[in-house]
Amino acid sequence: MTQILKSLMPLVAFALLLTVPASAQWSSYPSKRVPRTKDGKVNMAAKPPRTYYGKTDLSGFWLPTNPVKYLLNFAADMKDSDIPLTPAGKATLNARIANNGKDHPGVSCLPSGIPEKLSIPDGLKIVQTEDVTLMLHESRTIYRQIFTDGRKLPTNAQPMWMGYSIGHWEGTTFVVETIGQNGLTWLDMRGLPGSESLKVTERYTRPTVGHMLIDVTIEDPVNYTKPFKSTLDWTLLPDEEPIESICEENNKDPQHMVGK
Image 1 (cartoon, rainbow, N blue to C red):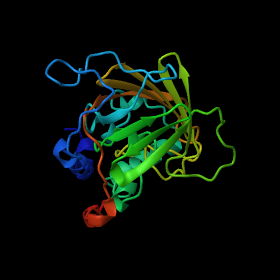
Image 2: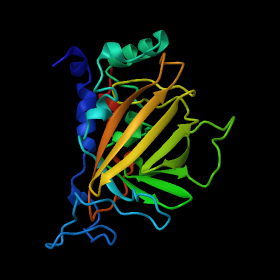
Image 3: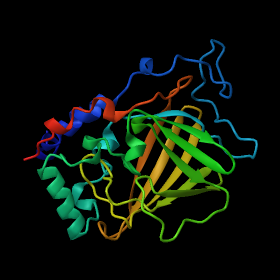
Image 4: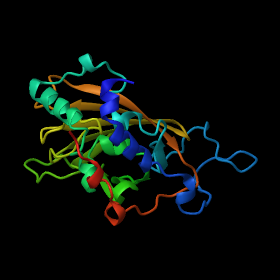
């Protein structure tokens, strides 16, 4: 176990507590728009459904395939030396690691931003329409709107935890651009930073009913010298729904996050 991982053990334990078994969801009810095998199970390997307006339908309840890999380290597939941190970004990351991540927003029940929110193992429900796609996150019971009605990203908008997102289609790939996050969120629980200048581009592809890939590109001139990306992996949890999750109701984390 590396020294970095050892320093993150309090966060590892916290992340593992986020994983929720299917039994904690609504009682199972069969989805109507997914193909099934003869025994009634969802055919996870089938081609994904399409919408009435001719696009791949991303709708469903999704979980990260690897529950905490990218939550703990968004750049898990990169060498640390390859992460293009600026001196300021490196100083912020090192300070967070040295302090055991005790100031992570989640410790105080504050929201995750993008991309960290995409890796929370509580899962999320996607509701897709022609003009807007909704992401209903079980964690913190937070929603996200991705507009596909032709509007542009705002200028000089008030910074928000989830930022502002617009999307468009490139063939079978749903491309989402997000700006306007408030600079208070972390890219992961390890501590990769994001500033108010952060721009996140997500590219969603659904090769089969049960599988989603998301290429996530990070651009932030304050913390990184050039763009870099990771590819996240989601698995459909068929016939299930998210359930309300209110962090503030039973938050016992702050007293344990003492840092160094």
